[in-house]
Image (cartoon, rainbow, N blue to C red):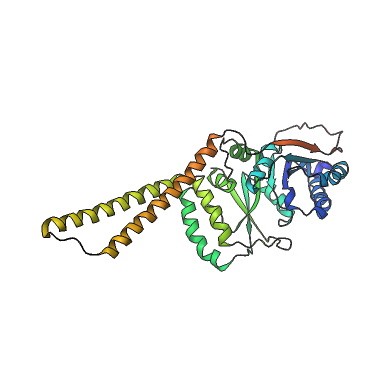
Length: 327
């Protein structure tokens, strides 16, 4: 009976490429059953990238058998965070959940919604038993130090699971920036936060955290969410210039007072090599920020929705979406 169900509207966002095509119907059915037993209003928002005619028949079958599904098809391939933002921008629930069906247990959906109702607008997941390489454990504290400089303070071993209240979703999606760094935005959002510690299922996908994957991602987060690295490069250029000026002044004084040239071709070669190294490092950072400016100058969105499919069966056609009191 619906009298025992929570009156909150829950939206669960899934990314189609996370789900094996052979298990698509089964996984969606399990999520739908879980939601229908606990919530009076809910939806499952699935982000499908590109046009895949091979799955058309399967989707048509699923949409005629399972209720409360919305399949949002975008025209181009997206990175994971942008795909999640598509879900956030198009979900209509009071609680929006970013969920990975292969790694996250269904129980944390209910826990996240409960914490939202308790006053925590942002609820994140934390892996109780992460798989990390040794090099990652060594480098992680150093990278975390730099990430804190841009305001990114997150729980260690955090996962991609989020349960967000409607206020949090509105705050996260209101920015006009085309670069969608979800974790940075969530961290910088000044709202009440809570975490859920759970064991991530690694059977389908070995989510081992490695340095070669994490460093480029961390650099992208820093560069596209802060100008601090640019300021550091400016300071480095000033220090290198002062050092070079001091060396030149020393050489001039030696020549003027003693009428001798300062010895050390090797020292000069090392100095010139060092200065050119610093110069090219600075230029590489300038190039990254130039690409950032070019990206930001394009005011369009990084994706285009080409179609939206919905279930042909409704949750309950006799139930009006009107309540005696607001949530």
